[in-house]
Length: 114
Image (cartoon, rainbow, N blue to C red; front, side, top):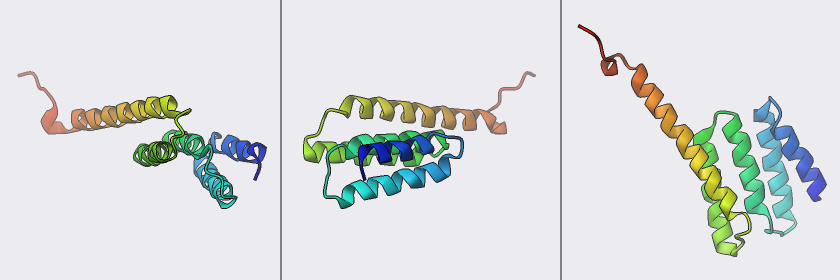
């Protein structure tokens, strides 16, 4: 699979039906790995993580970033590390905001007057 084909799969992942897109991205990553090439896989995993995040699957996106960072570290392929760290921050902030909103929504956590 060439980079152009993979980019087209990623583009599908960014459309409103993200669920189908993430499976296309996963297929693209597998197709890339089958060739024996590991170069750029952390980048492709970052794209997959973004698609998962857009599909409100933030925990899975964070797991994917962990995989990408581990692979980048093993292969000493750090050209995409800054973006991986930035995405980790975005995903952690989103998870924190979600936890806070859930806490505020619980009746026992509401402040009442009177």
